[in-house]
Image 1 (cartoon, rainbow, N blue to C red):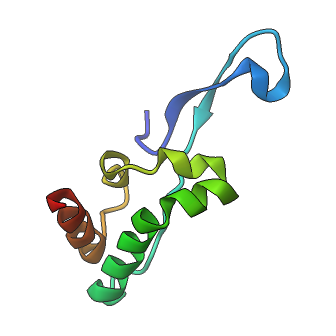
Image 2: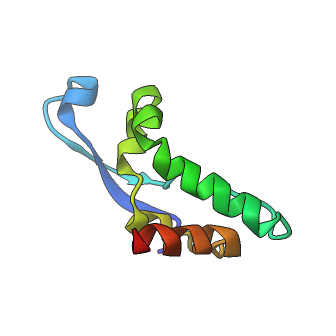
Length: 92
């Protein structure tokens, strides 16, 4: 199976179905060009984590943002600026 696709579940309460429904999910990934300035990519990545609560108010899917999940970008490589931001966030 392609790592971009994962098994998931739609809870019964979402669409008021009798049972949970198995499905395929594709994680949200913010894509940038590899030549984007590393400092800009670092700042964007840090801002996503700093503003996670506000993002989750706009879209509950943002609750799933985590340092662990942020590294799961296969088959697209993690931008060097994003990698630096995640390393800095791990240190805090």
